[in-house]
Image 1 (cartoon, rainbow, N blue to C red):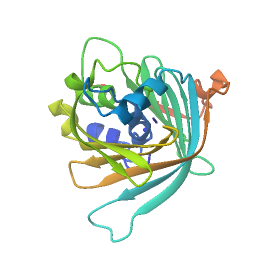
Image 2 (tube, rainbow, N blue to C red):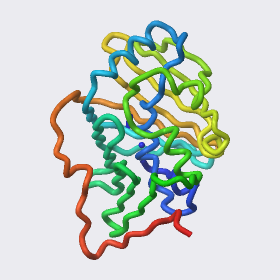
Image 3 (cartoon, rainbow, N blue to C red):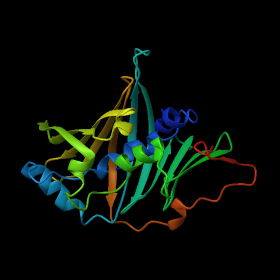
Length: 237
């Protein structure tokens, strides 16, 4: 569900290199099932249909070929079905990513900067295509999997089911080469999501303290920025 530290948006827009993995980490839960998926995956997909809201703490781990040690950070994520989410990375938040009705917003409180990525309209761009593959939301049907993802494997790993996917869209594969989702076999709870990028780096989010179907304040998803914030649209020409 739910995407923080390195930036998918930065790779697409050449700015905000620490932005959109907030979105990318979350959105991993938006996968849809194949008609002949294993029984464990079918049960998980069925369970997601009852989820209206979801929130959790997470530990994010980033690995790079140039670094011998991974980078880790803590954060919190909130999600309202079908598409709204809020990711906060750091305490206090250093990066906040919001998926709203028709745009993605990435906020850097310390820098007094906000980046806006429009999602509506007929014109497509690489960022919009990539987010469409990875956008937040628990799955509601099995219809879209074969048009969006190639299932590489479904396997049991300790007490979890692990699903490895590859985006079918060439525009998405330019940035994300593989998506991984893990959920618990006993209660079908999402436990982790991971992205492997085309440059060999990776990002993993491990979730704890999850809460399902609790009420959420709408203000979480409609922040009010102070007057001294600089608002930019990196994809706007």
